[in-house]
Amino acid sequence: VNPAPPRDPDALMDGAARGGRAALARLLSMVEGGGPAARAVARLAYRAAVPYTVGLTGAPGAGKSTLTAGLIGAARGGWPVAEGADGDPEPIDQVGVLAVDPSSPLSGGALLGDRVRMQDHATDPAVFIRSMATRGHLGGLALAVPDAVRVLGAAGLPVVLLETVGVGQMEVDVAGAADTTVVVLTPGWGDSTQAAKAGLLEVADLFVINKADRPGVAETRRDLTEMLGLTERAWVPPILSTSADRAEGIDELWVAVGDHRRFLAETGELDRRRASRLATELRRVLAARMAREVDRVAAGAAFAAEAGALVERRTDPYDAADRLLGPDPG
Ligand SMILES: Nc1nc2c(ncn2[C@@H]2O[C@H](COP(=O)(O)OP(=O)(O)OP(=O)(O)O)[C@@H](O)[C@H]2O)c(=O)[nH]1
Ligand SMILES: [Mg+2]
Image (cartoon, rainbow, N blue to C red):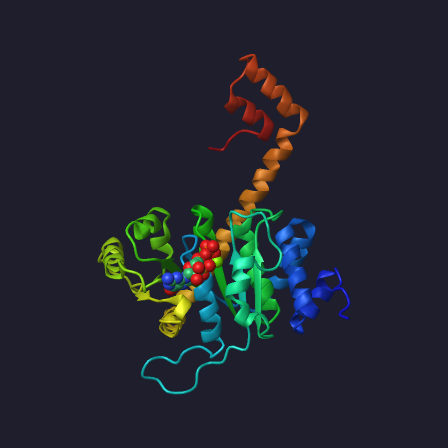
């Protein structure tokens, strides 16, 4: 019988780093739950090596989980060798999977559907699969996800696959936590238009047209190419097609992920991206704290008095804010 994992973050982190999956799961629950415990865990995890993160995002049902399951298998074979180069693939000893659903307040363990799709890997001790939703984390998933990724890094997982269901801005924010972002589309009219509307085209490093067994692949590819335009850029996102449920195109996708990873490393872009992500994270932490500060002010007597003065037209909202917070430096 396994003893229940301790609640002390240090002890849990030690356990997770020694391969304890219950400890790792407990740490992720703490991150999800927010509050002082989340903060303690985040602090411990921060200095550890950051895993290479591959994000998969796209509309509900596009096949992200099926693709993720395929990529787990591919990743277990190591990082692909560059075309034309020889040598062995750089080994990947463990793979973590985080499935994030910004629309769901439920969490803990794996979602049923994902559990089915990823069950081939569920008993592999080198694979750790976990669903995440937001509960109490200050700043929501956009902050909880990078914390969770770092916890996986602190536990020694070198690669994390991050699946996010498409629901607008939050999805784009979460997708922004990845080093390589894969946008998953399906053949059919309108799919790429929706991705454009959601701002996904900007964050895509790679496109996958999944369900390529269905008609409309060429049209979707053409739409996408048109929307991407002919802008000059150092990395032109490749458009791949897959039939994830038949395991077709998965190896090619993993090769493309490896190419992008190599591009980021060789150009210094990986460091720049990660630095800019951290600055964004800090802004989010500041924004979340300031939002809490507003709540604190709004709960006070001075606020109630100003609100009353507004009703009686004795002041206006801007002067009232100046009295509550001090003059606005503009
Ligand atoms: N025809 C076809 N069906 C597929 C393919 N890949 C996945 N599917 C099916 O599409 C459905 C959704 O697949 P998932 O992998 O759960 O999709 P998802 O994007 O993770 O879904 P959510 O997480 O709910 O947004 C399942 O029934 C899969 O079996 C494919 O290449 N071709
Ligand atoms: Mg899924």
